Length: 499
Image (cartoon, rainbow, N blue to C red):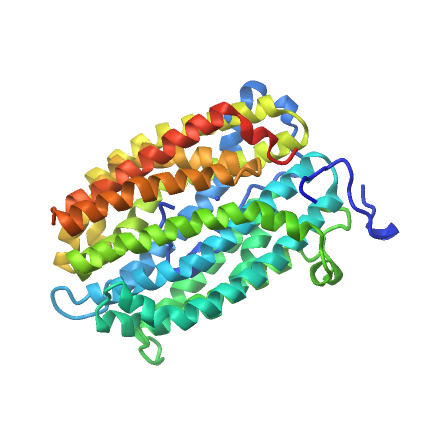
């Protein structure tokens, strides 16, 4: 079945007839519940939004901002704990670089799961908007099936090639030895993450952000407590350093899954979130739809991740471990300023999906432009603040003077790129909410492979330019993506993706 028709729900039996960076990932456990959606008892009445569109976006966004704020804060504390490992000048660079490189490989798994989650949101939101809950249930169960299969496949492949890949990237032997056990622990928890992210996506499609927001707070507290115990060996436990960070990630992801399952287990049978074991285990025709929508999203993430790995290769080979460590620390620091843009994107994705399900494409268009304007205004304010405070913020994450000195120029460039980045987030979310995952893929390919990487290779490998010019390649990447997504959204072909 190549098209989704919300007017003709499947009815296998009589009982079934029911009427989201540039984000280098945080330490993986801190991504749990990062994409939660707000809780509203009543369905969104898209026809009554009118001039209240901005207010509705803000109402849907604030729980996401709180949840992601907690997630990002936990990620920064994670980095700060890792940044306290090692002795002497530059000693923290090895564990920080190990985490940065290992996280890039885990991001291949994580990003595929995000793409499947976005497919889940697109299909479920349209079904909910069309008032066909059985279709939403089928999309939910199919997304779980696809996510588990992808996570198992990718985790096994990455575990087998990780050492050779790290060495190919030019990682120094101490960095490789520190990264491998940490990566193995987070890969081992990928199936837990797969189911968790799909449940969060289903909650978002149903406009329930508050439940995952509270779960995020609990999981983040548990993660940081386990870090404190296992990384540094407090309360008589052995000092495990990065192995402890990986183990804390796996344990906290297990806790997140238990809490998320508990949140949906008692749903009414006519709820879009109501699943039976039979729904999850039987062959589901919606799996093809999930894969069809997810594949461009997975390809987008792979394109971006391979580009980031290639970018890190330039940093590692030509600028050293300190530069990789600065990249590893700088991204989560600036992630606080990205939170509003990603929150607006998630609110827009849910609202646009439901508007299209209710056959109101004009209101869907207004929602997309409103979210873009909100993202840009917020980005300017936060970008200025983070650019001005870049060195004090860097000192919060590490006491290594060399890493701090390398962080300043990188954070300044990312602060300058904020409006472009936030616009890209907002319009990317608008496309994905409509089920158009192809346009963000094309934008990512243009930005990364026509601008970022050629500039980084030309300036770093051939001209041996100062590292500030390597950082500036990021601006051209995000500028290209923003221009493409703006043109694509204005053309409006995304309105027809699932019709």
